[in-house]
Length: 86
Image 1 (tube, helix red, strand yellow):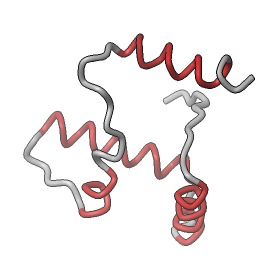
Image 2: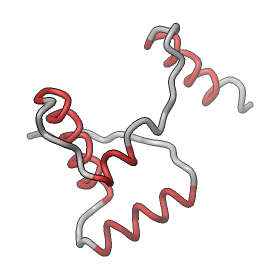
Image 3: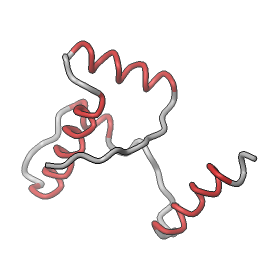
Image 4: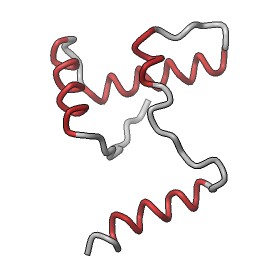
């Protein structure tokens, strides 16, 4: 599988926790992210595989507006990053 770079934003404390957890498990934050979302996608596809407690706690972290398209959400995020911070 080819790997691509992805930039995410998270609170400082969450980043510290992720790095500590990754170090404790001798892995990387990227590998943990990959495993988490692979497990969630598999569970969504199968619906028979129960998610573990860590995965369940991680789901539903982001509450996105349901009446907005992905394009509108992306446009707002890009405006926040490049226009409103100047």
